[in-house]
Image (cartoon, rainbow, N blue to C red):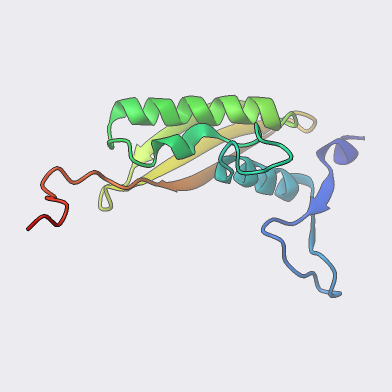
Length: 139
């Protein structure tokens, strides 16, 4: 019963399987790809499901500070609680890359509900830092 709940579906991104058809994924891999799909989709991006996705994309031009990290964590938790019923989100930790100031790593820690299997997924998210010194090319 638990394997049916976890499911089987098309791999994402779409790709060709070993027999030439659409590649399928199942069980925990299917959940992981679903989580990545939710986080990688901005609300409004899908015409037939305009509410689907995660609001982290609104933070692309936000400063790299703790307030942005908190907003990102909130968006991730809210989106996964709404769109992925097969998991329970236990924690979302947002860390900034020490070298690349425009990269945040979102560490999603979750439990698969039917198997009680604890997992985590690290999702890279890229921001575009605002340059205060730029003159906009006004020379």
